[in-house]
Length: 466
Image (cartoon, rainbow, N blue to C red):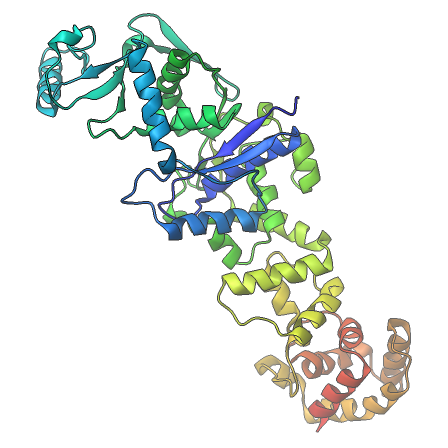
């Protein structure tokens, strides 16, 4: 594949970055990055009543969290309106579009009559071939001259060849009577001017492709490669909606799913590479192709997402995972870690990453290193700190004072102490967990001691035994 591949993601800034939009952005990003091309970002902000800076920020933050970096400056569709209008007037001058003076009342009357007579309600303007000398001094729209016979074939890399009878295409309005361009025109002009070679988007846009092709062909521009991807459905097989849970990318960040896991899972929603479920970003960039995208809708499954995320947490670099935890806390509006907590968390990562499927689970396992003295014990932990248990902890502490602080030595000390008291280490583990973490479910006692260090470990045991 040449380095000329250019893809784009073009969201409307009317809300958050929908999880379906996030997957569309990911597919475009993977295809561009995997083919040495460029991934561009355009904000389709022509709907001034609904477009907000806050929504734009939410989209950018969602893309940033997912690590989907774009090339070049962000394009504002609204700012390109003069260029869109210029193209409409070029088509008018070339005789490929025309001025239509029909009023809304006339169009409505036409459609009602056509419906009553059983004819097509696609509007057929009497102004299409009118002599310009008959044009009134009145407001007009500019309509494109649609082909009136034959077929339009959308050659789609996902859906295959889709054939539409040109009798189904009307003379689409390009420029409204107030001089503003319509969305269909704006999209085509922007994609052409941005050099977009591959349009990868939801299959709810498939019918738009035939209408947009009219503009490409009228202007003599190259039609991009189309790839219309199926929508995401919920577990019940219906289009993903709020009833299925979170919809926005940032909601998933605030729920504690790691970005690498979300990228992996979204890539597998509607695309596959053999039977591979877990893969790295590098593998995804190398493997992703349009041929691997399925036609049928993908089903969003929270359990599969959690399993994939757990695998990514397990293999993540400790420093990167600590940073991701800090990002989660900020997104969830939870207290930030101080420097000591952040350093402790990173030290502890080696004994936290296994079997944690989300960042909140990981941080719960890390409670022992994030809390400070005096360690507050929960109800179950208090139950483990009986007077006899506290007596054992008081006796144990001197044995740790001069011990070498490594796992092998600590195991020897603990097992020797247990044997001297005619018990097994398992009997000591509960009180030790309670003293060190204030919990009964924790990483191994030895891992906690190594992470906390000699002084902090002895101090916590002394507190508990007091």
